[in-house]
Structure formats: C-alpha cells, structure tokens
Length: 144
Image 1 (spheres, rainbow, N blue to C red):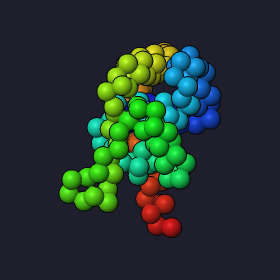
Image 2: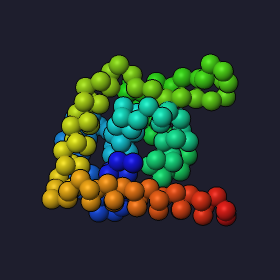
Image 3: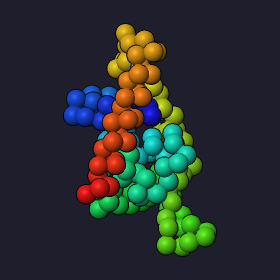
Image 4: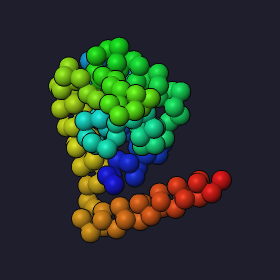
C-alpha cells in the first residue's frame, strides 16, 4: 500500500489540492479527475468504476460523471470487456501520456516531502499497520 493511500485525510487532501494548482490550471481538470488519471497510470489492477471508487472512497454516481468528463476530454478511453460486455474498463488514452508523467513527478515529490525525516523501517511499520486497519474496516463494513 502506498503512502498516499494511507494519508487520504482532510489535511493530505488540502496539501494535494495545493500541489496540483499548476496542473489543474494547465489542464482545466479538477483534483479528482487528475487523481483518476494518476491511478490509471500507476496501478494496473485499477481499471473499473468499482476499483476506482474503492480506492478514492467516492460514490459511483460522482465517479461516473468524473470518468465521463475524462473520456469527453480525451484523457481516458472506455472499453467493454471482451468476455462480458456488461463490464466496462477504463484505460489511459495516448493523449494523457504527458499528463501522466507530470502526475508521477507531482506524487513522487509530494510523497517525499510528506515522509521527510521518517526512516524506512518506520515507514514499513506504518504501512503494515495501515494495511491491517484498512483490512479490519473492510471486514467490519462487509458485516453490516
């Protein structure tokens, strides 16, 4: 689990918003749209609406609108699954290559700043504990 997922709280979101100002102004995309482009470029296992919603913790209605906007603007493409046409997968469009590179750099720089002064072993413990907490929350939500 990456550090940015562990820090998906209000403070980190404000910091992320601040870090994305230049990219947002250049692309006319909002923070969530930029985050979706980053997720699709960074994680091979995040391809469906459900995957993206699970990671971003956003509802499907809001995320559907976000994905539609990205498709209309040419940053992502929507493809039906070959085996089951009911399933839709999202992939990056060729036009998003430069944006993906920019987002990679932004995330790497932001993550480096956030973990500054924390040694690798402490980060490893933090990631293990966060993963267990996330697993516990998922299990509790499934029981509802």
